[in-house]
Structure formats: structure tokens, C-alpha cells
Length: 393
Ligand code: NAI
Ligand code: MG
Image: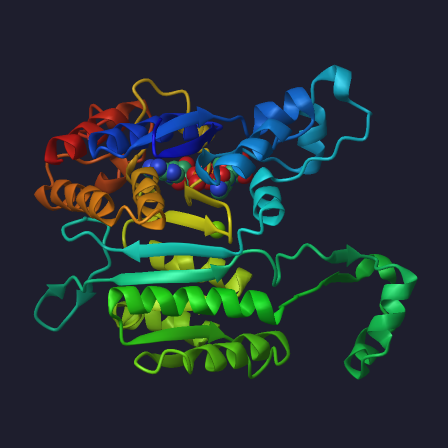
């Protein structure tokens, strides 16, 4: 029997192209696992009225470790129109399977490393008066994954009792005369326990990597209650890690700083929306979607996935052209999670070697427009990129 069982959820579109590439790499480094396939995504919605089938939930519950590709999601109207005829009009409602998965298993810690590989033509560079330098960016964003602005508690035209509750706040006076249909409210929820868990994950990571500090990135001067609780909790947690400093930045200023000195920030922790923005912004400095990996980590279950979606416009290309590195890096994060550090390090080193050498590049790395002609323009296919990584291994 293998040491680990991993639930593989390729999902939709290019998820089906990149996930098998990650498995080739995991096998090549001798990861002792068996893989169980599980369905997720648009086809499940269309045929079953549920984008996250019960069998997939059960498998994750049982095996606790998941690798996920990507899903397609569409607005409510399109979702209902594409539902198989027998299921229409039966009250099915589309829910994003990723959000459902995060909530069901309380995958509250989202870890998004944005670590540059030297020689990647997509890397951030800085112009000095005489030349260009490529600072080494090694930033990991810890994003609270289950609450904050994405808690999903929101209304257009809030019901009377909600309106009454809002009216009890002096600041609501300014909106008191707005008709319900013209009033939208989204609630930002922060709980101390979840704040503590995300900040602790950030400090633990800083400790493991030997970094000098952790940055909490919020906006406590304006969003006093929720950002305030994030920051207060960070100060409390920081006391447990006397060797690691706690720095504090505001989200707006931080986005300016990342254009100036991104290399100063190794570990950033933030609530859901700010963390989402920060991780995309930092990912853009180190290669973008072809390189952006993530982990959704709960107390029991953990699921690793590239940040990108299903890229439907490339999903039918043969050979496939998308970059498998984001998916392969997600698999390496899964190895970190189960403490297979040496194997994870070998994978990252192999990717680093391929990128530095610069002979093998997918279309995104060449800044090509994409599409079938990318190959004739000098890009390698998805499979050839993995082949190059396997060769280095
Ligand atoms: P997307 O991430 O699928 O693609 C945007 C663009 O980024 C692509 O057209 C392509 O140019 C580039 N790209 C993405 N992955 C790449 C890779 N591995 N290598 C090279 N280039 C890559 O986002 P989009 O187009 O906004 O959404 C498409 C579908 O994916 C939608 O249905 C959306 O809801 C869903 N989505 C799912 C996510 C997930 O499963 N976690 C995340 C984001 C979007
Ligand atoms: Mg995002």
C-alpha cells in the first residue's frame, strides 16, 4: 500500500491538461502515493446540479489531501441555461465548488508563494541609472480564506430587520433615505480564531524559512473594527515569536511598495480580499498565472491548486500550450505539507534549472499571444515543458 492517497480533481478546461503533468513529476521524484480521481466543476453542475459531488467530498474527507486543477464557472443565468433539461426548474442553484470546498472543510489558510526563478523573462526588473537589475523576489502571501469580505453575507435591498440593525449605527444615517433597491451591503466578518490561525501560519513559515519579519497588511486606520482585529491579533501572535519582527503596512501603500521594493517582503499576511489582491499583484512580478501556485490548508484537509482558472480558449488545443509550472509548483507545496521537503526541493530546483537555461519556454514566457500558432513561434507544448523538468530531475 502506498504511503499517501491523493484525491485528484482535474476539473475543467486546462485543469485536465496540467494536472497529469504534475503527477508525472511526483512519480519521477518517487513520491509514494496512489491517486483517486474525483469529479468537480462545470460538467458536474450540468449533469448533476452540483459542481462538488458528494463522492468528491467523501473522498476528501477520507484521504485529507487533494490536488485540484481548475474549474469553469459562469453567472447564474448561464448556469441555469446550461443545466441538463431534466434538471431545469427544480430549484438547483450553482455554487462555486472551490468556495464550497473551502467552507466545508474550513480550508482557512491560503498560502500563495510568489517566488521568482532567476532568468524568467517575465520577472520584475528595476531600471537604475546605468542598467537593469532583477531583484530576487521571495514573497509568500498568507490569505485568510473563509471570511472577511468573501464571507458571502450580503444583500441588495436588505430585509427590514437588517436595515433596522444597520440604522442603529450612527454612520448609517447618511444612507437612511436610500431606497432598498438602490442599496447593496456586503458584510466583512473577521473572527479572532481565524485571524490567529492565519497569522500563526505566516509566523511558522517565517520561522521555517529563517525570515526576519512578517508583514500584516490591512487598513486599520479606516476599517477600524475588522482590520483592527487582524492587526491586534497579529501583535498578540508576534509575542510568541520573539526572533521575528512584525511589520504593518496598509493595503494601498503596500501595492505602491511592491512596485518599488518587492524584495523587502518575504511573508505577508492579510484578510481574504486584501490577500487575494496582494497575491495576484505579487504573482505578476514573478511570471503571472503560469507560475502562481497555492495551498488551501485546513486543520484536517488540504487542497493544492494553481491560481489560474480553466482558460477555456486554450482547453481544446492539441498539443496543449499552457504552462504546467503553476500546477507542478502546487504539487511541490503538497509535498512540503506532508513534510516531503527533499522531494519538493528537487522539483523546484529542476524548474529553476529549466527556467535559467532558457531553452524551453511555454508561450506565456515568450510573451506570445497564445493559440495554436504559439508552437510554430517557438513555444514548447505543456508536455514538452514537463519533459524538460523531468530531464533535470
Ligand atoms: P484563467 O486563469 O482561466 O485564464 C486567464 C488567462 O491567463 C488565459 O486566457 C491565459 O492567457 C492565461 N493563463 C491561465 N493559465 C495559464 C497557464 N497555466 N499558462 C499560461 N497561461 C495561462 O481566467 P479566466 O479566463 O478569467 O477564467 C476562465 C474560467 O476559469 C472562468 O470560468 C473562471 O470562472 C474560471 N476560474 C477558475 C479558477 C479556479 O479554478 N481556481 C480561478 C480563476 C478563474
Ligand atoms: Mg484571485
